[in-house]
Image 1 (spheres, helix red, strand yellow):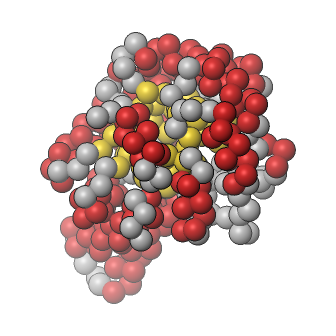
Image 2 (cartoon, helix red, strand yellow):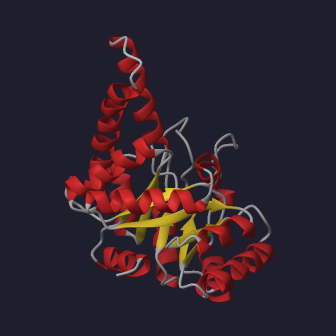
Length: 276
């Protein structure tokens, strides 16, 4: 089964695949421990900045594949939020299962053209492509407004013109922690699902209440991106250990932080699988 088949299966079952970013070996291990505990598939995501930190897409892919094999977990590797074709091509060539080209802040015609270019390259290597339509604020950007929400008619056109495999939609979420309780447009999501058959993706899963995750899944979301809370759990775990012990041995400092990530991610997998 490939990543698209898995997402379609989850959507048909009114469940979703959890897509978790990892940043180093420790966060990767924490995520995969959770997937193993829950006997669940998972998507492992790397952003361009994480790839830069790790050194190359090849290093990120080798790390993800080897640890997933070690843990006995079915894990799909995905490039998150690439904005240039060079990074996307490098990840396709490194054997990623899926890549995202993000031209969502460009005019619609430019977004379509860039996504089509990504699709042509990735599909030649049997790699899936995700794109984003609408405005999902990134870290440091201004607040969510309905002006940037995905329009169902444009989503239909976008899917037809690009042949993209999965579509991230803007319905009121944002990347990072929320400054106020988000109000998601679930009616809009249902309307998009009614005219678009490809799997839909929800970005900005961190900070959303479990019932919001479930409502989104019930209305067609097949993949939920989850990142900020993972970084937060890991760093808080490390800070706590530094306050309680004097050791500088990373092998004793890191395990509790890894465990915190595992506990957090396991709870989100349960929501995605409808078992919480």
